[in-house]
Image 1 (cartoon, rainbow over the protein chains, first blue to last red):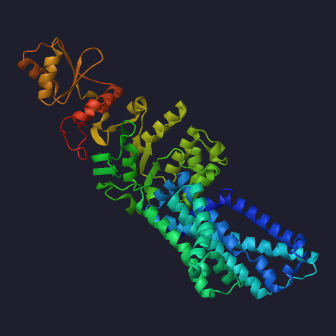
Image 2 (spheres, chains in turn yellow, red):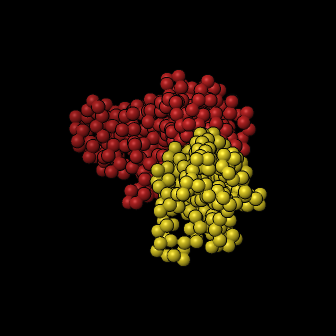
Image 3 (tube, each protein chain N blue to C red):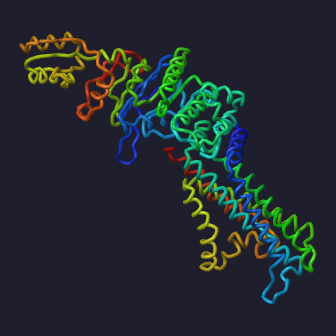
Length: 248
Length: 314
């Protein structure tokens, strides 16, 4: 058995249930919501000034942090259900060197997360582009910036899925893993930012603002590195836990 | 032709000893049934053999190699462990496709094993809609996917209908006859009597008997005497295991029938019956695994279970 064979098996695990389709349906909903905001939303003054500039439109479309949350939930569910349904047993029988099986799963969810996020970002851009003609503004975001938010979302999707899969492998229960994701990405970062103001740029919202070009507190390469750390720490914890634990 | 060897394996979870210095071997070309009450440590021992759990002490090997060191374990060893190790929303065929992908097995095998276990008609349905028997068949299909020479099956007959039980028995006998190694845990003692060449019996994590089933079933003596208490004392002093049978007779394990007669004669105890015992497996099992037997610790091993087919009562 090769590593590629294990990755293929993990990929088939993801595509042979309705999980990716459920997330895709959510993405379509999010894109529809963005289109509705563009078509029907106004600011406090009743105008559509929030769409007036390329920067405004780019901020509205930037989807990376949402992508990270969504794919973290996806990765957590994908990994934790393996333990809940005990399908991890045949996996470890095929690959008794468990780190290889875990790395294959991380690779598969990384790819799936990146694709889901890219599709989600594409749908949001398409939704906004379709809705803008109903306003007095055209589509103002240049191709280079569009490419940047697509790339940031793909990165966020991959990172989020790896983070979630790491938590899922540690916690081994879908409910617990989902709660872990919410705590790690929703609850703890704002708390940390309040307690340690210097940490504020390094929480995911700040990092993806820097990567999407909608914020500039952190340099993009540093943000890239920090996002990688956010993903790899839970993934490393998952790898260690799986390696040390008995499969019972 | 791979033998399974469990060598002085000890496993603890906290203060609970699940496997206590277990040593036995499972020979190729034979069906070996692994028996013990619930919680005796059978599943844990199998998991240690398959590197799903780590032994605190000792080793478990397949053909002298640890499971994790086998070149392609899914092709060498077929396993049924968990009756519900399936994603309920995934079809049976997709479950097998995933395993085939991971193990590098040609997908042509999937249709063949599904046909072999009689599950082709339901292969594209979600496993969530399967009965327990259908899940067992799917588990067996997964175990047979790599056409392995070794089968390690934990309660594979659970949920199977009588036809399924017969099919399973014939399959396992065929595999053993072809030189395969078949190691099966089961609670269905009547089925074990029809299936097993050898048995390994554990109780509270300790080995209590191992060897050829036919020989073990002969490994005892029935004695009737007007002085059962005195004879029991005499024989137990000599290291025998003695218990009362259902009809007031004594069931003696350990010494040979000649020795039982000689000791009774030496103690001037009259005997009304002295006969070799061909006990039912159920009776033997209950004797091996009753709390008194486990606490008594039995008698020393007569032979090395890893090298000899002679029965061993411990």
